[in-house]
Structures are given as C-alpha cells and as structure tokens.
Image (cartoon, rainbow, N blue to C red; front, side):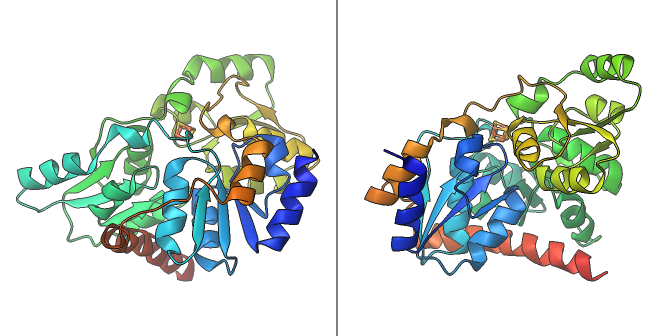
Length: 306
Ligand code: SF4
C-alpha cells in the first residue's frame, strides 16, 4: 500500500489536519499540513477548522491541542509516544510546593508537561516564548516556580534577570550534549556558527553562538545561508532543513529522541482510518489547564505589540 497517497486521501475525505513536530521522522513530516515547534503547533491547533487533528508528536502535544480546541477529535499519532521530561513532575508535586509557600507561588510550566500539571499552573511557556512569558509575569510576583526543565529555566533566568525556583527535570536528549562537543566542532571548523536548543545545559549554551527553539532555528537557517550553521538539537530539524534545500549540519547526529521517532506513516494511516488513539480528558481538567495555556498566548502576543 502507498501510505502517503492513502493518508492524503483520508485526510481530505475526513477533513483532517496533520500537525507535526520538527523532530518527527522525515517521511511523516512530508504528509504534514503544518510542521513546527510546540508554540507554532499550539496556535495551529487552536485555530484549525478541521474536524480531526492528528498530532504527530508526543502525548503532551496532543493533549495541548485537545485542551485548546476541545470540540475537535484529537488523535495522538502513536499512543506510546511520551516525553520522559514531562513525567518528571506531577500535579501533586505542584500542590505540595504551593503548600510550602502558603500558596504564594506562581507556577510557570513548560508546555512539555501533563494536562494535570498545566491545570495547577499559572502560565505555560515553550522554548520559543519562554523569555517573553517570564518577562511578562507581573513584577509584584516574587516566587516563580519553573517546571519541569531546569536547563531551560536556568537559561531564561540568566537572560531575563528574574529569579526562578527550578524543578530538577531535564530532557535526556539535550542533557547529554557536552561543552567539549562544541569545542571539538570549533577546533575543526573555525567558521562554525553553532545554535543549540535551550533545553541544553547552560555550560553548552554558553559555548554556542545562540540558543533557539526549532522554529527559531529554521528561520535562522533560511535567512543565513552564507553561514556555516550547526544545530545542537534532535536531528529531525536538520533533516527537514536539508530536505527543503538548505545547507546545515547537526552538532551530534546521535541526539535522537526515541519517542519522537516512534510515529510511522503506517501509524498515521491507521489513526485516520480507524480514528483511534483519541485524546479524552475531563472537561473540568481541560478548563483549568486552558487558563495557563491562554495566559501563555496572551503574554506572547502582548510582547509582539511592544
Ligand atoms: S526531545 Fe526531549 S523534551 Fe522533546 S519529547 Fe523528546 S525527551 Fe521530551
């Protein structure tokens, strides 16, 4: 069977849209209607007129799409695709932290988190808008708990100047990138321009030329083809840029996210055919979680107007 052709047929027949993260396998990226990072995908999920959203990504992304657009059928491309970092904090952890401060705690949560954690949060953020979101938290707020990614938190704390209480979570894919790997590239390529993801350790970010989300990386690569660019993140984004005709290379081709690579074309075909793997969440939970996601969008758009 030609899965690509069948997917395109089913997509049309069922008025479905495929939203796909930049880290997903290249052949799946090719059937996507929109390819992007967590923030861009959230906005698309909220705006789409399609009846079905197939989310080629990991669980928290499909949950976010469902929360933002609850009347749609939202399907997770592969039911086993989770995010280990999202599992490093749970709702009870947040409740316990709030109790410790007599509820004087503002919770800023990376979108890489469960719906339950989002429901206990004041605002969400992504790697693309973390700085804007943190800067827009009222200055009267003193205690900001940042969950779950300590690396992103440390980076945002450094550039925003706001003090954050960091949770001890991390992305196992980005955590493994070492400063020595950046040194090694510079030693063999003196013109290297190295961009890493803000989920990397701060000592890695400090060695790189800049830190950007995958959408930021894609934009930079498109606009700077005179430069010798290396991307320090999951190489799915490198495959995408090369397929689009751009010259770019990975810092480390072994930074593979196993969960992002679980989705196959066959999965997408059966997802659409059987409308399986639908995300179902209680309405009350979604309403609570939506507040923190909408606050994120509000803070991000607010910053654009400045
Ligand atoms: S790359 Fe890291 S943060 Fe993203 S889904 Fe994989 S484990 Fe989670």
